Length: 242
Ligand code: 5RP
Image 1 (cartoon, rainbow, N blue to C red):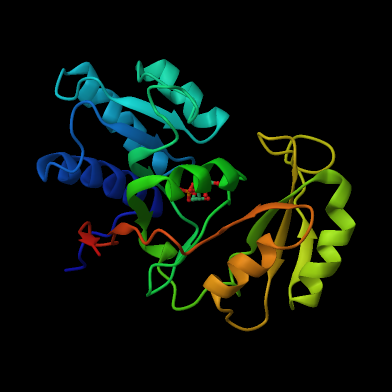
Image 2: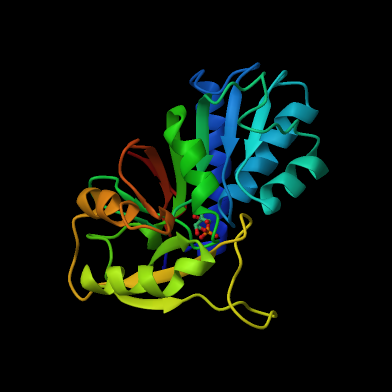
């Protein structure tokens, strides 16, 4: 008999809901906390689960910081109170951030920004005491940089100069184009995205800093400085925590 396998979309929902319930059960998510909420199709069911726990009265006094318009709108619909990182009640620091990822390496270095929200996602993740990633099994990879393109958010005026510097670092660079919109993707912050692919695996921690040193780069999608706890759902319906 063949064992039942679950789809990638089902894995995303499973990983997200499992993670929130596990974090609540282990006292890592508690009432009164300041929580950064990520963007994308795996982060959304985590946001929904937090909204459900608030509606059921099981979590109270949670203050959220959203990483995109997508997440802000979801929070507004779910009744999750949203604040700016700069609000006095947040004070620029969070207890926890939870988000999805495009790739996770064995060392738990990440590529993020498939949804073009990497800038706020990194501000939130790097200012959170604990960082949690939820993912389907396709995100688990042996090395970064050769399959899923690294997003780099750039000031529009620096598009060409940054692209030349990224090529000097060995990347093949593509300006991200909009879907159902003529022209390039414009981020929530009014910038453009250059997607970068390498022929061979790269050293993410070194490149994260080198790319950020290029004039005109706002941020890049390597996340190496706050190592997350990762919940990965598998095709057989189990979830690994690592
Ligand atoms: C958005 C992100 C997302 O977390 C990442 O792209 C994963 O998305 P999904 O959960 O939809 O696969 O970094 O900028």
